[in-house]
Length: 360
Ligand code: MG
Image (cartoon, rainbow, N blue to C red; front, side, top):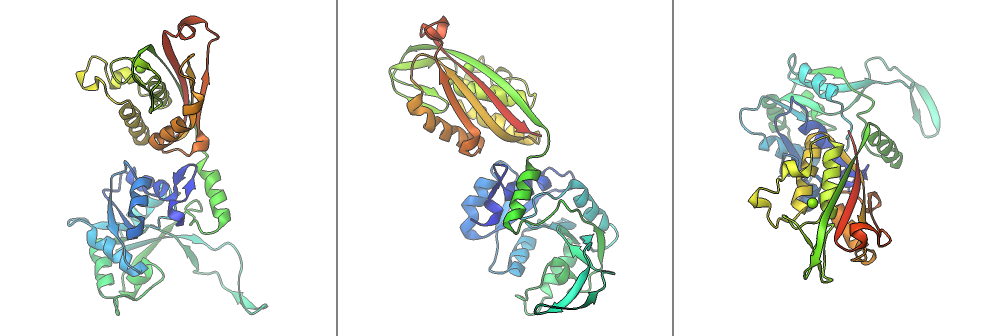
């Protein structure tokens, strides 16, 4: 799988990257240049994010050109970023935008800390001065008209240069150096993914809880954790009464302190009559994204004598993983009886409780 689509902390690399631009107040529109064969993968990876997709070309030059061509008229500044740098800090984006107030190009750079040596074969030749030497990062920022002209002036048009600053410099554009950031590293080696996993798992974890009950009644089927169960029992309620999804929805709303399911989907509102409850959970997932929260884990416990959950457990975990965009090792479905005691023991109702953890 291309590295942009490999998961870190349960989310594709590209999603981490794009999310940081989408939520930055200085960014108006994000254009994602992708290979045509990756279109489905990219759409899944970026579901729910407001981006425009553009098909790239056979070379880096052709892909950037396609992206620049798609920038809407009236835009003044454009930042060109590498999808495999998922930890670009907001302050670095600010620095590039500030650099563009002074020059037509801005390049985030880092100093070179290690001594530099030239060599040939296995032998050291001589030291190389670090004076005036920098490590280049992205996003590289430009005045749109200037970088478009620079790409138009490339001869031949498919000339491959190292990066966009190289294209800009070839056209004589003044490019300002601005401070880069060590966190804005590019995922290249296997150990980079280990570092990325550690970084993506930083931050504050918050857990919300949810609880729900619906009455059991004879019926041809019930929906539970998004799975259809045909055992002559149903759940009664205003929507499809999927107590599992309701408990998880409330837990997620709890984790982002966004009220409860009744506030977002009042039972008094006729539009939710018979509604499929995955819509409620999908809405909560969207609210969580907007709040800057990343889902980490869900654990739901279903409390009933019947149906027996075991044979539906894997289907439920798969369905929840789909809705929550979580890998299966972060989706737990458990079941218990209450030893014949209480309303669940008497088979009058089914209860569900859930915990959802997010990282903010
Ligand atoms: Mg309910």
